[in-house]
Figure 1 (cartoon, one colour):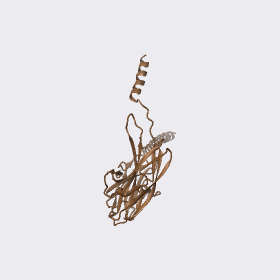
Figure 2 (figure 1 turned 90 degrees about the vertical axis):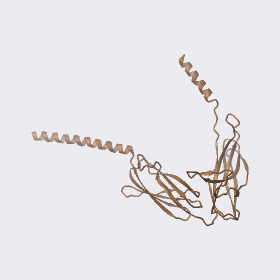
Figure 3 (figure 1 turned 60 degrees about the vertical axis):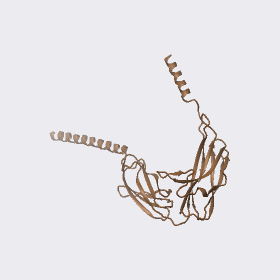
Figure 4 (figure 1 turned 60 degrees about the horizontal axis):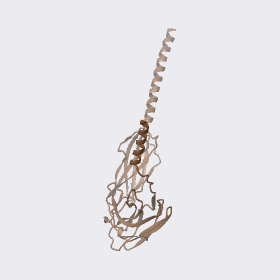
Length: 304
């Protein structure tokens, strides 16, 4: 009887706590992820973006434009109605303000960037915004909006201050002794100029014996003016072991200036260390046993 009461109370609690089962909506995809342009003041150019509807239904998309800036971690932030330090939104036009796309289909929209002649900045930064309007609601009249921004980075060819530096080259955890491979690294690059940079480069890997592995390629990634942006990369395997010297060489992607940084990491996987320790213990025990056997054998032989 008690079991039946427990089962009944469990079922009723589930019914009241979770009154509805909501099927998750799909998503939509926009390509390219970003666009870089070289455009002089007083000129214009166009490019296409593709919108693929994977929401599971016919959907309406609104197109707009916003200026962008960087978050504290360097990621792109849309500014909405506000103007950025290097504004571009007023010069971005889409061929459609609104477009309806059937589920599973892709539509192409032309984007035009038209710069006036009075532009003075060496770089301008904005984004095309694509907003999905979803009339579906969850338990009421809520209107769900999902937005994707495609950053547009414009170089105007005007005189620019190009200034960047490696801000950080370290393990992701900050520790120099790692107890399991592979090794996760973090590289941060600061842009102190007024034009976006595209840092990228290689990491040379040298082991304890001076032997070099094939260099690892990092980047490129873009860094907006006045910001610091990071990239993560992973080196090695679960079987990496020993001391490694990592040499980073970065090109800022604009004037080919090179910078270098070095990092020394010890990789000491605990499983390998445990196996080595166990092997030493077994070897020690065997040697002790052999030594005792040898002593007994000699004593017996001398007595004879």
